[in-house]
Length: 231
Ligand SMILES: C[S@@+](CC[C@H](N)C(=O)[O-])C[C@H]1O[C@@H](n2cnc3c(N)ncnc32)[C@H](O)[C@@H]1O
Image (cartoon, rainbow, N blue to C red):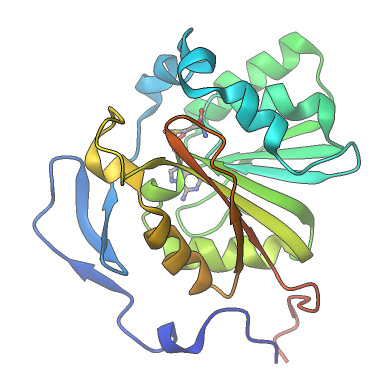
């Protein structure tokens, strides 16, 4: 059987508990308190008009390692801010979220724009609902810190990646106090690397191209086809 997450986590108590911080759920994972989920009533904030200028979302999109054959999954896609802007540069894109209200907004935008290569997927707290070994790139913008089951989601994301596939994780820099975002909605590079390497992903680089966020790139081993038969 192929092991694609690090052995020390298996069999251990993965999650802990604490008094919730103002923006937290009181559940910890590898020393980090998980944040609350941003509800669909915050959808307008994701589409704010100054987002490209302040966060350089244009640079984020142009830095993603994709081409017109790439099968991509945007996990925690929200209103589809990134999915819809990326669609014309990739082969096919799965836009995954756990809030049907977010996907309804996205579906309306997809229908209005005539885009034909984006599919919305209603995931669960523990799985993005993607097939094993099916995507070249997973990217997560400002979403991973909200995952209430990061270990289970992480395993399912690794499973969905093709051998040699990449995962790009964008999170506001916890190391920079000037970034005006609530504490648990930011992550340090060291914490992200700790959590991704615990899943068996290899850290490739931090692109450092964005003014407020990390751009962290990880890869699944090219030898590592996920065994879905369980033998
Ligand atoms: C702050 S929003 C970011 C949306 C989008 N990535 C963006 O930057 O515009 C985080 C999104 O992650 C979603 N989310 C939280 N937990 C999730 C999970 N386990 N699986 C998929 N999506 C999740 C939330 O529903 C929310 O829409």
